Length: 363
Image (cartoon, rainbow, N blue to C red; front, side, top):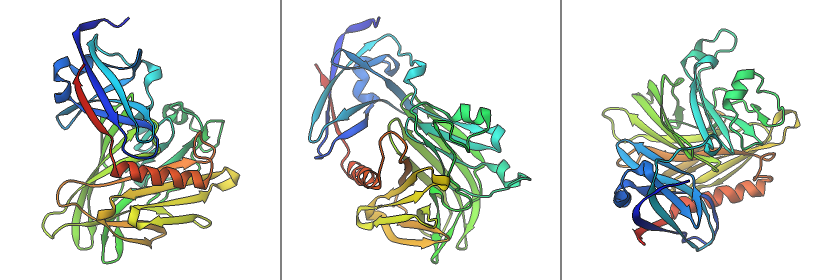
């Protein structure tokens, strides 16, 4: 039973200004707005009488509280926040997970209740059986909301579908499903495998981690990268933030892309800042959708190079290069057709352009 501390209750109103529903919307409240309730770890979120799963974040010294809800078109929802005993997440509350996988040639693998991905570490470059140098984003398809990364690595048989999904995708040295690089002189220059990883938040609702890439030659400049990846529960798309270090030479132009295999269907909506791929999976295992979304005001070109479809963008005046990328399988729970995937990506682009509005006040 929750023990409430004191009588103060804050009312939170969440506004959706779009004429579309926003399922699994992550609501984030800054610690400063919750100061009257004290320690964030003691703040509980209620939807009526039902307590919602919440997570405290402390990223780069900035503390906040997040929870998730579904919001209808042009709708406002109200919640109550109360101070109580310290929150304790249960195993069943966790819907995201990620870790460095030393035992599989230094992968970093991550997932939520919809998707799973991985990127490749240093040891894979020198694996005698099948060495691979690539900063691609790989895909594991899932039909279960269960977190499977640890179990699939444990049995080491994840290239066959045993009822939950599998690793059917072959990223290779391409960009895979959302890898990036530096664009210079109509060429894409990409890094080697990541060298360091760091997890900043690991659920139950949001995963945040960083990968560090050593400097590589990119159009006559040496460029190093720190890539931060954020994945929320219920989402098909990750947020990628690439902080590039290049010294003198002016702002960088970069690109994020998707491998374009034979038989794939590509759609590019440059003015909306997104592109998507829809491709058949080998051996009749359905179809895979991949997508990349970039702030349309930063997009300079949509092109193809090295077997990839690319959105080319300029770096912002300040801060990292930001884009969203992710996947969907037509045997998963909610994307069954190409039309479903197009709708999902287009609506995600709308949601990025029109964030929810949040108001906090005493009850």
